[in-house]
Length: 215
Image (tube, rainbow, N blue to C red; front, side, top):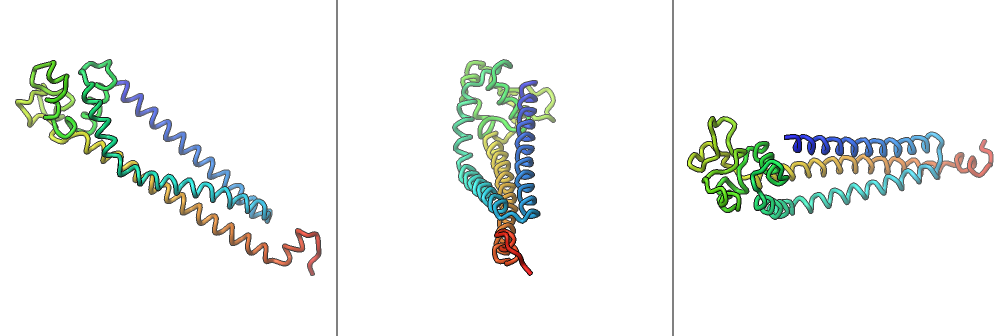
């Protein structure tokens, strides 16, 4: 029980830390841009554009990698989930067993593709009681003991498809967030470039930086 809660807490804290780091980075970049614009510094604006360009390229790489990896999620999950189910032993101290039970309860699923997958596991063959883990029991099923003789008491859908769906949803959120940040950064670069071009064509600005006078 405590392991899933700790994992969720750590994931939440990690996500929050990443969001704070990204917000701080964007704040610093924005501060550089504002100071450069107010002080009419060509060097500052050029630095601002370069930083935005680097961040923009990073965001584009994230989008491309996310889209490419999204297509490979199913194969990766299939290989990993097969390995985890084979090591299931039904004991609470075992990490793989706790993970499988947690996923089956949270996603309301049973087995890899369906509950019949448990018949091919070493745990099922060793127990010889013709039943699946209790985590496969529906919440509405009373007195469920995981017996295959009562399939209506078990979740019918397999876990692999649901895990893949969840991961792909998360990756799509990341991709859209990266695209939104990239669009904002592109807009910032265009604005900074416009300011730079206007300043370079302004004769008053040219005389100012060369120490001349303008009447």
